Length: 359
Image 1 (cartoon, rainbow, N blue to C red):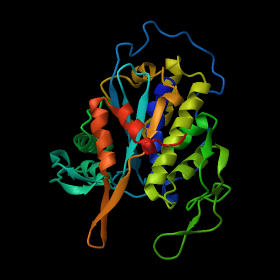
Image 2: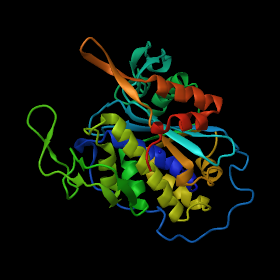
Image 3: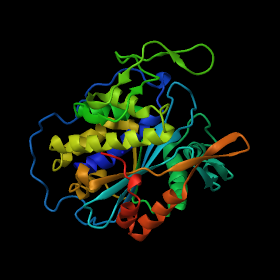
């Protein structure tokens, strides 16, 4: 969904997580392993620079974290924003709120000249896709350009101005989790994978359109240690009670677990290792911001998993007649955004405790 500790867990981790929504067998090639340059389980502690990077960042901060569906096997495939997460950090940088917007949220997307898009009312996921189009090179979509349009749409909808953002493709998630030695998570319900077998191999596509055949990986309730492919597979499942909203909850819970793991590896005050992790993600990570990622990492180094409140915004399906069109936030979900902007989010959550995602 993140670079100095919670910092590393906030930009790299959070964005990384966003990707869980969409990978399919055609998009994955091998099960990733720890990458050269990734943090070792017990790194040596380096002295902190004085003053540390980002010492002048005091907040509040808003970070936009996007996971995209990039099917590398399909020429010209346009990236879709299949996970959109927002991290709000109030002034003081001692606490944070993480919430998701539904990928199918119906929004107004403005005209975008760079992509030749005329504007319209459509699903949020499409803003990334439409914005990434390059008229002169239709088979070479531009994710940075897509992020530009998506961030404007999200900013218009939420009323939040973003200080930085990140876009991560599928491979970055596996690499990051494996580089951390896996993550520990409390699985809150039985999850049967539609995509993976127990040995990690992909299930074969079934006959006709859609569906898979073969043995299925099962995640039973309770404490579990997950490697990269398992964490990705678990958090991308949405054919569950609650659908995409349950998947959003699992993504957020996994993010918080990754924050804790990063804290345990003592990466916090090691900027060179933070840069190595980001470099290891290579072209799987697109970072957009006016400051170096390590500066945000250090600025957010005081956060802990307990200081990050996960919020689940309720929504409803909307349509025309019997045709599904997308999702909209309920009045309570929209009110959360109003109170967040006004600095009254703690009081609002106290009055609406069901919005808090269980730890």
